[in-house]
Length: 166
Image (tube, one colour):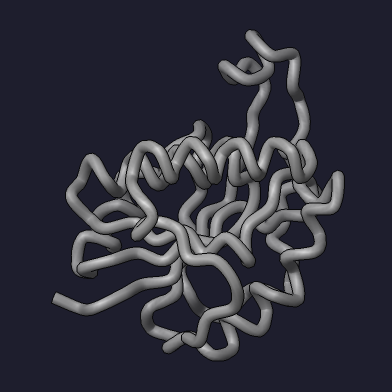
């Protein structure tokens, strides 16, 4: 079993709002220092008639630039798993099962990122949130609330504050 993976969640143009873009250079540097074979990406894609569009009247991130991963953070050739809800798709979970822990960065801390932490925990894979490399397109308040909830649910070992090395 490998030691640790890096999961980069939804660093897409459509989520670069309310200050979330602050994590792009941080994640770029983190990805540059991380062993290439141990990096995975999630990319959210909405679609007409989705639960999001029907229940939240949210029709963003369906096509084009909004769905595209910000190029600065993408390591060419690494797998990108599209997902259509909050949690990671089964293909991503299968790939991550070969690791003792999964270090997580990206956007939105209060949505898909937190859902990934729950999914990894339930799959008995240790999630490690790299807080300095996470943000919310809803703004800093929602990011902090999500971090506080994860601290409560998963303990202090689940959150790493400040910069880290790959």
